[in-house]
Image (cartoon, rainbow, N blue to C red):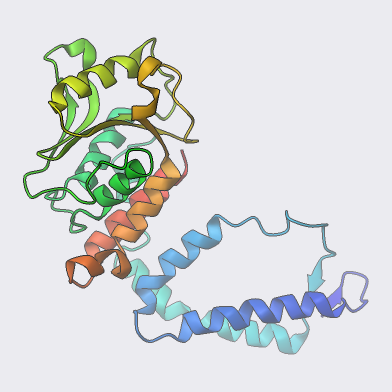
Length: 276
């Protein structure tokens, strides 16, 4: 491998490249999952990496003729699986087509659908369980999973006043959670304190919490005396929960194999919210 001036690059560069392809090889030859189903996840992961930013800038390199031929052959073998992904619609983004963008109301509606164990998305209660797990870290009295009578509603007015409309309400016989969705909008004066007071009254003795969902998982500033009941979440945490919910690992608890459609919907929405 040679640099721009024709001088050979040191062994580290060649070793790092070899190590990269050695680690990638098992993924490409693993016959357990279909390659066409794994490629979107692979490219989604690669998209988030920042190659070359962690250390000093390296000189540009050129591949030798033999190395170039091998690399071209390797990429040529990807043509079939990539075509399969394209034909199957796995490169599509339904959330971009739905024009969700950074609209808080629209994104909250989709999130509520995934949080609803009976939402028809095929992920069961996996995402809601990850939410409850995070809340239990702050409030240990919360149950591990919802009951069969759990309901999830959007744009709910728990006290009947439109002025206190909450983004998402999770109402279960054993707990109640209000989710406040933030993307660009700031907290309104006294907003979370009002929501906490409403949730406490609606709970009637059940464990309750307000989940504050923001791009950076920041702490609340309008909770007042209820600060201990507001649990901050970052959208990246929701993305992680969605990916687990759509994976075979996340579905093991339900004893079912992951469905292609539910996996596709969960992982594409995870990619969408990661950009907030």
